[in-house]
Length: 496
Image (cartoon, rainbow, N blue to C red):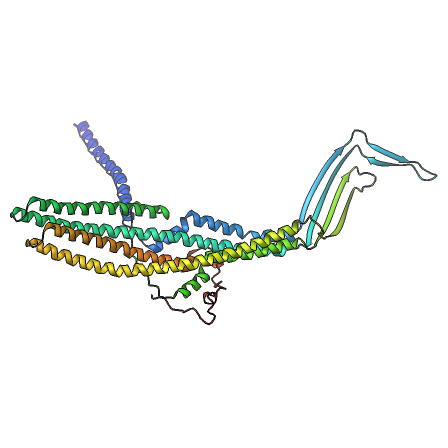
């Protein structure tokens, strides 16, 4: 009896502990899985803004990081220039042995004892130190100036790369917005087509129409569904491209709607003047001219004398008769180049030609800037005009469809009239969405043509923003270039 009670008690206790153990195991498996699922769901519902996409690209895009490394490399050039004026020291050592040493003994006279002189010892160990320091090096100042000009050029190139990358990010971002709005429009058109099909079936059931009317309405519905599939695929592709472009580690995300960009009110001359002031590719062209001038100065430095100070120390084991065991010498040398086979003159002519090429490239860049500004400005104006017309067209198409569909309900219009009105409405809405984002993209391209695209973000978020040349570099007046010396560029503020 006692044994049975003890056995029952153990079974109950063991069962309770086993249940608790299984409960702990289930919680350990289920809770982390649910937590991870919740995180994924939270990530999937994340709303990405355009500013966040910009900052993500600044931190992860390879082209930006490569350009930043170029700036880091350029910052080493001034140290290389200073090394021309710093001491250079070399240590040398040698060991020599001969088969037959050569000695000579001078005869003695009277009290003078004979003396043996070592002309060539059996073995000899030598070591020395040579220190050279340039007192005047004509290459120093041109090299130093070239280093700082290269830094300015690489910084301008760095910011130009940022503008190019962020311009691509903005383009892909607006492509996602466009595709998302096309998907929403396709869903609205499906609802409209479904109402058309439902009404056609009701009239078929009442005997007011034949079956071909329902089939035609279903064709409109199928076209709307195909448009939804196409727009959904475009949205998925646009999201994937943007995600890969900025290295975004999210399974799914949505993009935030952007406020319409401000319209451009400045004149063409003002836009060109701003482009000369702020475009980094224009600053790069100016830097190329400065570098070409510095290269000429480097060639001219080869015509100038140089002054060096040298100090040599040596120590010899088993010195020859004409050597001391250790000794040092100091020397001041002046080198004056006289004749080098005309090499310096040919190099000078070559660098002068390079300078002319740089100036021509600068003029070509300015012409391309003027063309780009004019092209983007006219494109933006054209898109704006077409946008207003398409908005009116959508209103008319919607009103036409509503009237036609109302007539169809009462038998005053055919299904073909409804189908044509539906197709016109779908086409107008699609064109309106495309043109709306075309206009926003054209405004972005105009900002990029002016050189002011995301300029504040670049200066604030970039790790090299403190080194940027924020002052205007424009030395070119477009009004004077046209021969109108009394005409000044009209300055207008952009509407906020």
